Image (cartoon, rainbow, N blue to C red; front, side):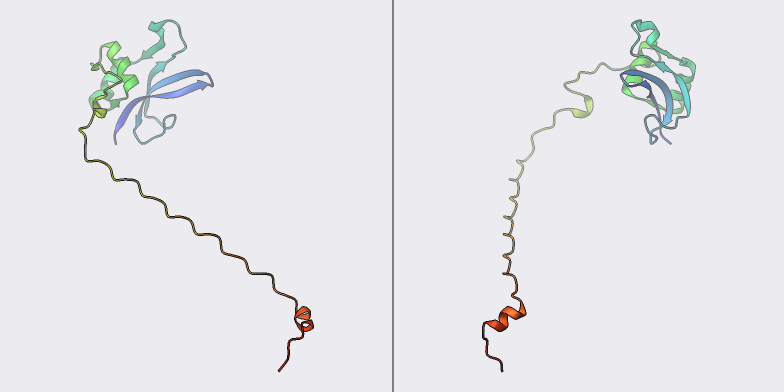
Length: 137
């Protein structure tokens, strides 16, 4: 079971509030979690009170193998528990520029659609056929 230290959203519309939780990586963002470690309130003006969490329990879960998400890693780095490498938004480590490859083939053309089938004229009534004077055998 892979574990994550991540944020679970609480609060109302336009008023975000997050719980810092330990959860299974497969569970939904606001779904089942194993343990609540703290809170994050981005609406607070005082930076020192925005993030509160239990550092001992966070250290325990990291020791067990839980992987923090990017935002939680920022909090842990600010608290001095983990070191976060500085990142540049233009060249993320997983999205480094790739060497040029062979040219891509031209896109396939769609076949022209077939015209709709022509409709037959409506059938004549039997009485109309008899009146035309067709010879009977």
